[in-house]
Image (cartoon, rainbow, N blue to C red; front, top):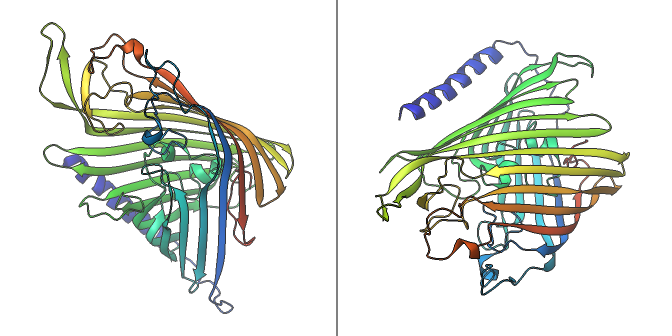
Length: 450
């Protein structure tokens, strides 16, 4: 309880301090004499022709991992003495992974509204595409100087807002960013968002002073685009600084949400740091996160001497991940090359001698062994050809390797020999990705250079 009160007090205090500091600044009213209400329709789409040449034999890849094998297709696919060559190792398909249709309307100089319909693959459900309202919000611009208030279904500042890792790094058409891929946070939430600039000035590319210092404070359901009746709300905060005419961006992010108080207190706390640097020739970025899942693991301890298990106990799990991204211009305005490397561990506190029945980053159920506890190493690399500035054709390789955390020397929870399990395996996909956007008045960054 004390932790939640402290974080809420810090959140409220930050708003008050920033409000007082920014309201103290004088501002001149904008010229509204020529304003006319009006709107803009826009949208984009990306998808692939994908050929999967290697299947992970245990069908791993939780969260939003794109090419994990659905359970319905993975029966009989586990490597064993009786099944040394798993089935379903190759497949290919055309697929639309995302389509956005958006409408932005300027109501007045102070107020605007936006709505976005999305058709996307539901990786956490049945792998089928679903159409739903992704964003729908009212924006009150300059509620005080350099500060906007957003109410409704907004973009979260964990990675999706301006000066966050998704727009900074670009290439969302190729893959989700680290936090999105592992379901650490969603890109949308329902609630209130305060976005502002603490400091802003124009400078040249060689100036070491910041171009701007900005912040975003948010409170929401913490349930993405799904309706929620939970009594606990999720708070998020993002602070970022841009240097050298916004070529160098440094940022930190944090969030907190309570899951329950009874029968024991569970909560999630996320911390993230990131950096992005781009020039006319190349772009490089890195982000690293840690999420602490308080009392999220339920387990029993095995005592080998007596061949007995203890009563259920709880432990705190810690997820960590690092992502490094880079892109290079090969032919100006025509051809880029991009690459990305991720490392992810779902629970650094996991103990190979325990029998887990629940873990926040795993799957609820008994005998959670190599199928549910594994690290991941992700690679994605390709070319980006732009025959038109709003059309991208990207041949690329998608690779995700899984390494089970269960030790072969640990207790046998299932009665099966560990030698019959595939401890290390990978998914390998070769893709031709296509991406385009329409309505040239809408700027939607893809490759991180513009």
